[in-house]
Each structure stands twice: as C-alpha cells, then as structure tokens.
Length: 201
Ligand SMILES: [Mg+2]
Image (tube, rainbow, N blue to C red; front, side, top):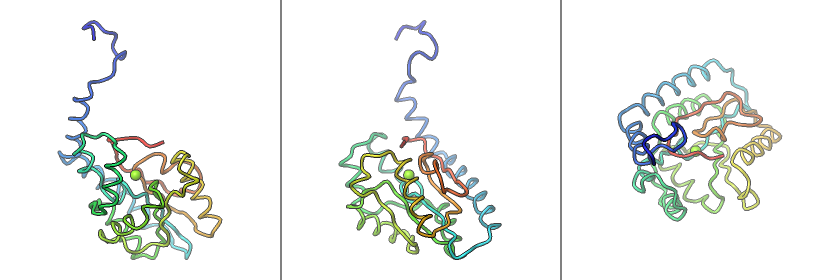
C-alpha cells in the first residue's frame, strides 16, 4: 500500500483489529458493558406486568452461551467443522450476566423461548449444554429445520416469532447479540448484547 494512500480507501490491518477485539473482551470492558445492559433490562422487566402468555425470547450463541474462548483459539475465523465440534462438545460456559436476567425472569414466571440459528440435528447437544449451565426452564427450544437452512437469520427468526405469536405466546422481550435477532415483528423490548467478533444477517 502506498504511503500517500487516500484515507479510507484501504481496509484496516486485520492483525491490529484482532488485537483490539481481544483487548475489548479481556480488559473487562465487555463485562462492564454486559452489566450495564442487563441492569437496564432488569429495570425494564421489573416494571412489566406479567400475564400467563408473557414470553421472552433468547438467542443462544453469544447470548446465553459464550463462544469467545473457542473463537479466540482459531484467531476469530469461522471453520464450519470446528464450530460444529464445539456445538457437539456441549460445554460452552454461560454468560453470567445473562444467566442472572434469565433466572429473574424464570422466577417471576415469564415463559422462556430459546430461538437459535443452530440446526435441528444439533438439538441433543444444544439441550445438554443449556442444561449443563442451568438453563433448565423453558417453553420451547426452536432450531432451524432443513427448509430454513437457506434463509437469513433475520427472516428465519421473524417468521418463528410470528408463528409463536399465532400460537398464543405474547413476546414482550427479545435478547440477542446480533441485530438479526432483533429485527422484524413481535420482538417486544429489545436487548442488544455486544458482539465484536462477527456479524450474522
Ligand atoms: Mg447469537
């Protein structure tokens, strides 16, 4: 790259960006941000009056379960086989701040639905990992079926939330690390968690 290059014309250096991302997650800022976001969400949900159909939708990866260590080990790339092995291992840690919010909502009697982009064939290890980390109470665990493999996360999740609503669930809150978790109809109150590692559309 020429030294007199037009500013903005060239991408940032990948190595530098990876170091910045690593620092964000490891210097405490990620946890500080999570604490602030979850505190605000708790404040909101404490004011909500509960009905028998009140439902909160949680994404799974990087929302209730943490992918960071696994991704750092492969320098923040995406290798499908490794990601799948990691799902099958079913030992991802919980994100403690989100677990606190989940525990509060369960104790209050809100219905919980997990809505993940993971595929139905991985139902058993996904369920095992959720249970291992104490996410034992929920009304549904929704995963992509083969007819949904080719559509965007945003469309898949919108359609599934619409379906839930037709089934009588009243979605009053939606928690995810991607904007595609929170776009479209029937989200209720949106809680966006930080993710500086990847984007899913
Ligand atoms: Mg996610």
